[in-house]
Image 1 (cartoon, protein in one colour):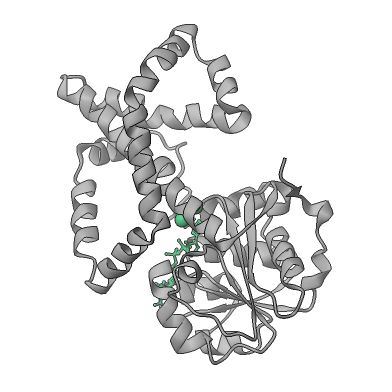
Image 2 (spheres, rainbow, N blue to C red; image 1 turned 45 degrees about the vertical axis):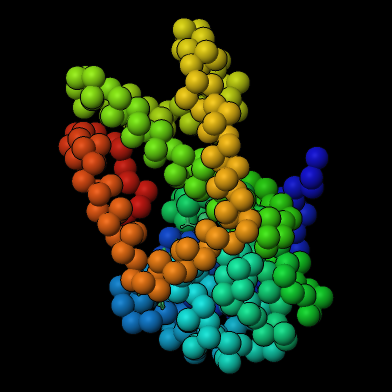
Length: 333
Ligand code: NDP
Ligand code: MG
Ligand code: MG
């Protein structure tokens, strides 16, 4: 089995007295910043003026313009949306970093697909939590954590690995497990996972199930509970104890249906499509398409986003969740 590192394996002291600049204060940014601060490290936030700038100040951080935050930093972690990172790097980060400091990422996209070409006199590493930012924060507060991958692209100081691992420990990942990876492996597996399984696969599966039931005349509320709401309860059992734990808890009738019907929904044809998706990630065509979509002002992204928002599952879900006050939203709006 590959080596998995935990808090006891890390040298947290390598970050003592170091300044960590967190660039961006969104989903990952607020979580890294707050967790690192509570782990005892010195954190400063780099941002443009705006909503997150005010929020970070309200949360008690020193907040500066990106260029100023980077100037004194020993570690600069870029937690901006992937599509804005190259511009901000070129305009405000590149010429302001200290030699021998470290440039860090939570996803390998910009380095792997050469959108950012880092300076040669800095360390470059990634610490990629395998979970949404709001859960990186929430699990830390619960004395738990989200697992993370770390990878080194450039090691000029000889300390990049230790610093990356200490950073991962500082955000709480050492409680859940830290694994070594490369920028290539992290980028390709992360894109594949979110497209084929976690986000794209899941939303399409949920919608197809909801539509099949409502098209057949069943109540949308029943279809919502069946195909979306209950998913969390099933996934929690998988998270806690794998597929076997989920199957142990469900009825034998459900388990028999799982065995005979599941492979008819997700079959060899689905796997062939997954392989196609993986190939487009590996050969760079997905990345190219996404970069061009952004350059064009996101016409397809916005159109699909609008269409998805108007799907009947959205409205029925809103109505039902209002009646279930215990269903909290991890992502505060
Ligand atoms: P967000 O979309 O949540 O980041 C938004 C933040 O970036 C806000 O603080 C926003 O400030 C700021 N920002 C946006 N554009 C600019 C700009 N042009 N100049 C300065 N600041 C800007 O990002 P995520 O947290 O989702 O992603 C950050 C990184 O983490 C990405 O590399 C992503 O792949 C990776 N990642 C994300 C995960 C997640 O859970 N979301 C999971 C694992 C990795 P303002 O309020 O001013 O707009
Ligand atoms: Mg991911
Ligand atoms: Mg991702």
